[in-house]
Image (cartoon, rainbow, N blue to C red; front, side, top):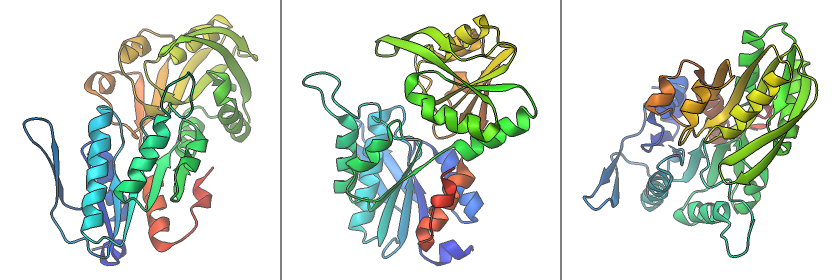
Length: 318
């Protein structure tokens, strides 16, 4: 048994991303904690923890991905179960934070859903949150408990360096909101920078209008934090190729990939599409030859180790 397991650290998982939880446990050389998530005939959830957690440091791995509400409720009920079982500390490990896109009032009489989810997690009994690539970094301020917002950058940068060595690269932001992220990648890769001017006509509908920057004769890599219906990234790929790029690829942290996303990717100008496993791929996405998956298990595992020991996690923020 590993040092971590004998020193009060236990990792549990809901139903949203059990494979990632198993990979994290493999990295830490410890077993996954036993917990059952059952469902009554009317859809009501029931949580049962199969082992003693009194005075232990508990980490619950659960992405609030599709079905978002079910997985969020699972997480809240698991946290409550551990709190009522006298766990010493409960950390919600949320690789993908659902409702993050609703972080401000964009119209009259609408909720700030990201703030409500933060309140729910806190009231349920979470003492700390570890998440990754929040859609809006200010969401950390919605919590009254510590939040570690990790970045998939180390994993993605390693992939780009290994798969595109010495190539004439340009990093492309698919919209103005991602420029800072794209600039940071371009600087570390000694690559060029370009920006797609995107006009969103309605939710999940975007039209790419123009390209700022030079991509002619270069290998372009579109960088985004989240891809949902893939309208933005595929429109951007078309514009980039029309401007004379040699080839175009895409990378993202969170492969939501809902609706027509996979079909759009398959028929797009994208040569490849790299994603991480913050969200497990659905069958159609897993079968798509263009989509490649990189694991964040080691990165999250290191964050868990350092949180458990009380060490700094600053070096994980590339």
